[in-house]
Image 1 (cartoon, rainbow, N blue to C red):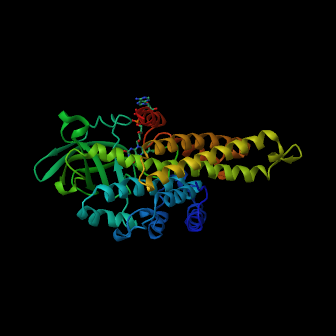
Image 2: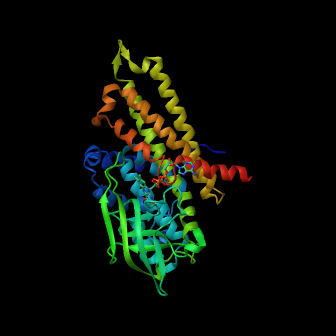
Image 3: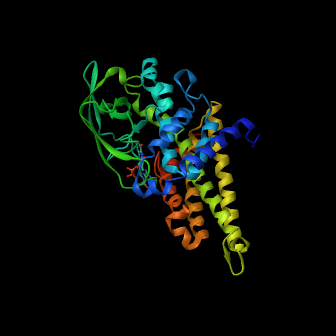
Amino acid sequence: MDFQINEEQKMIQQAARDFAQIELFPGVIERDEQQAFPEEQVKKMGELGFLGMMVDPKYGGRGLDTLRYVLMMEELSKVDASSSVIVSVNNSLVCWGLETFGTEAQKEKYLRPLASGAKIGAFCLSEPEAGSDATSQKTTAIDKGDHYILNGTKNWITNGNSASVYLVIAQTHPEKGYKGINALIVEKGMPGFEIGPKENKLGIRGSDTHSLIFNDVKIPKENRIGEDGFGFKFAMKTLTGGRIGIAAQALGIAAGAYEMAKEYAQQRKAFGTEIANHQAIRFKLVDMHTQIEAARLLVYKAAKDKDEGKNYVASSAMAKLFASQVAMDTTIEAVQIFGGNGFVKEYHVERLMRDAKITQIYEGTSEIQKMVISREILRK
Ligand SMILES: Cc1cc2nc3c(=O)[nH]c(=O)nc-3n(C[C@H](O)[C@H](O)[C@H](O)COP(=O)(O)OP(=O)(O)OC[C@H]3O[C@@H](n4cnc5c(N)ncnc54)[C@H](O)[C@@H]3O)c2cc1C
């Protein structure tokens, strides 16, 4: 069992760290305040290959494994979780889903521009009445022979407006329940496809979250992913890997807040000494450090399980469940260590605290992760 990352993995980590400091850090507070999408930064991340990290080079990706992907995700998330969720959705949900289950023609047409960052993707499962219970899809894709007619509304879609390619889950055969669901590739600009207003969010405010409305949108049959009725399985399999990306995001948010709090505690003085010399603060830092290290091991383990072809359903859910709790706990403590400064925007930790919360909600809430894990452990 080797707990160390090697030199080449460290280089990827360092490249992501440098990028985060040089390109993401400047302006991160303003983007958060103004809910501004990091357009320039996303373009640069595409050029660096961050948007198609795991995609085979024959489709223009970097061809790296999940472990290297999470190393990158952690570093970006230490600084800007709004940018890292854009990266995570594009990599883990959209590119992975298309590469694993798409046809050759779909890969050429859609995966290639997504892997290079020329286009951004979105994954559209949630609806006003179908969140945790994703089987209750109300969006319909009616089979018309050589095409589908898509009607319905999707909620909370990350990259909702910035994307050009949308993987949309919809019900084709309601009588078959979740086995009648399909996944369709929808392009921005298709007649009848409208994008709702941007959500005004607590955290990850730089990412653009929108509802999507489909009114009689005609989707060619060749845009269906997998066999007829594969859509729900597609969504679940894709989300299983996606959770590793979000777990890495949570880990990064926690580690970013911890690093800032540790530095601050060694500078800020109270009662004639640096606050890091007070045991109450030292012990907070110890707890943060220990929790983060435990989360990191779970995240790396889930990534390794996926890379080694093992069953990673439980390990990815455990990594997300635990790392997202650590992100919440650590960022709250970081704000406490910063005192009054923790409560204002210029010290960053209040933003990380707000950003942390979403990691317990999207790609399956913590309660849903427990349902997933319980099914896995009780089956054995
Ligand atoms: C910023 C943001 C970005 C998002 N991005 C995307 C995206 O790109 N694509 C996408 O498809 N979706 C996206 N989502 C949606 C997200 O995945 C859902 O919000 C999430 O799955 C929860 O669904 P819900 O909001 O409908 O909550 P509900 O399902 O209504 O749940 C409400 C509460 O009840 C709990 N609960 C529900 N069922 C059970 C149960 N059986 N046992 C115990 N507790 C239960 C939940 O854990 C939660 O605490 C995003 C959401 C947000 C806020």
